[in-house]
Length: 344
Image 1 (cartoon, one colour):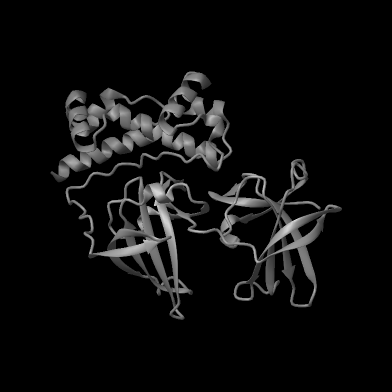
Image 2 (cartoon, helix red, strand yellow; image 1 turned 45 degrees about the horizontal axis):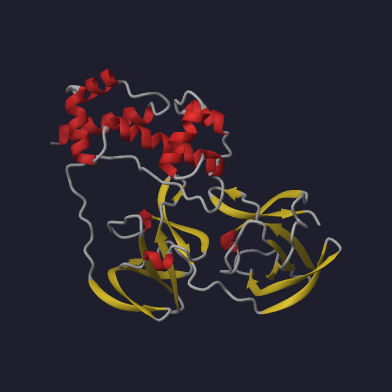
């Protein structure tokens, strides 16, 4: 059995190294030490897809990642992954991901993912739930499968542990909630059988004893080639007040979302305040952008949409303040969606 898994993993290695070409049936047969027909039958029995179908899905998975996160061009990507023309590539991409290649960078377009296979004779046990709880969210009761706790004290300065629940049958209630754009890869969870269309509740216990609760959905999100869950908000933070501010010589109403202490991680600033400009129309469609970016997870939990404009006020230890303006323009940095600073 071990020899079989070694051969199958060698086949996968060969496929992964030649995803830009069509699988060489003769070479794969040589590696597997059996006919291609027998290899294909075994592969299909174990994985549910043929060798060629696995290779096709892996090509489209990696092509999607390059288009969404690495600023690759559609034509270059099509040719790289063995498609004769952008038309045939677009057709295959649309069929797999559900949208055309030119839409890949849009925030509302979530990539499908076929992860790399690995065969093993030792079956990794899927963790059974420890108990079933009843959790009420927004007045609705859900059955919640509890999967235990994971210690965080050895690698986090803030958190002591986190506990995991899966909310059964909750996906339809959560799929349209606002995403924070924070993700949690599957490998952060216990050995659970995570499938697309599930909802998870995680309680983070801080070292001061307070508890922070977060919600994630498995909707096909991929981050740095890893299948991941995406955080969603039960209720976006409401503004604390509406201010009147001037940006680029024009007055705007601005939703004020409070301040954030910065003393724990920088000596340059004491705190920063967040404001989102309202009713900006097309005023910021052609601003001159700077290189600095600020990921969404640096903001309060307010929810984002393309075109949002923010003014952030930084307070320095010497009493001076510095105001910076950012635009949600679809920029990403290391896979994280970001706002980008612009000149005022």
